[in-house]
Image (cartoon, rainbow, N blue to C red; front, top):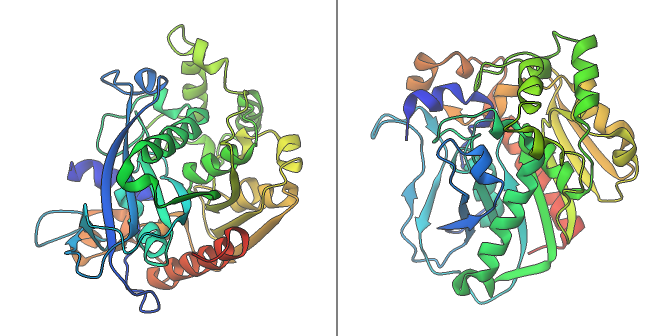
Length: 358
């Protein structure tokens, strides 16, 4: 894994797994899914999506560290999982699709997904093509409306895998994500993308966090939207406003979602899916008033939790001393662990209520 890329992907790295209230081993399996739009987004024009599946594992499973950074001196604490472990039992379990943030990876968000798996969910996450920390970032990868298709393809791949499929209860399907992944979660429930709306917003508010160049990819929103009008990307951009919802999704959990200004307000108001949003009230990247709070004002069935003093990068993994020395993204005004635990606790309560306890 490219450590330099990891340092740049602040918004998408995750927190540790020291939740004593959740016991048990977690298994990890890797799949490959096919999505035709991936070839346009991926720098090497591959039409595949990397998939990670986490699930409750047998008690004798042997877990390995998922911490990020050099061996013996990690930059970020993430947790552990047992590769290709047997499932804990033969039960069918509720499923959570997970989307990482802009430039992140599935593994970087394991601080959040591993506790869900320990609690009894099967979590299916992806590395979004052209917009992840392991591959070269591309402008095409910023076409966020293609992200729900990655999740749908991952779900299909898991459903075609005989080892995994018999454990999936697709009648209890949820979706979750962080930052751009939170945006993805809302699009997966039926919110429609409106690129022109984002363009108008950024013309009027050029210094808003979602309109400024991001740490992970130094293009302003204006430059990005101009690229969407290029001959290579315009045909796919023409489909941005299509219905990108994922059939069967019953609940969505969004962590510091953005850019909400690229979603049609009328479609948010018409979205009957239960949604939970957690954010930091000191977030300059996904400013609450133009993102999480904005969505909560329109969504008809929403829970909103705001964490005082918490910024966007507080939803990174717990930084080690080496991480603090290596990247400014590890400078936090409040302790990270309570922030992470608040998100985990809220998600577990929300999904138990909307999907039924595992």
